[in-house]
Image (cartoon, rainbow, N blue to C red; front, top):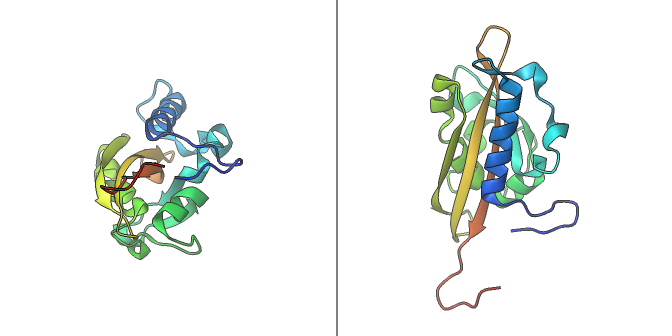
Length: 160
């Protein structure tokens, strides 16, 4: 959706594949990827399309540590002080979050994709990934997510 020089276009598949490969590198030969090994600089070109949340006993109260500029813009949101319950259902970020409970349960990344109508009423396709990072006790202490969307061309309109 954007092609600003400082945020090169990142395809949906490439985003998911690169984040998954990074998670697998962090995990090494163990069952989980530890939080302490995570470094956003390792995926700096993807970071505008990513978010991180700290899980909470009430999933709606999980807090965002980071919401990238591009995913916030694609969701029509500002990023100050967000909790999961603040996210409108018709946004890319909401689509990327809907499998949080499952990722927390299985402690393994989940890739998702589908179609939705965005906050501006446009039909869109999305792809997302949620990556669990564990603390020293094996509990998920941070979720890293990435998502991209593509607005579908309306019938009768020329492609750009």
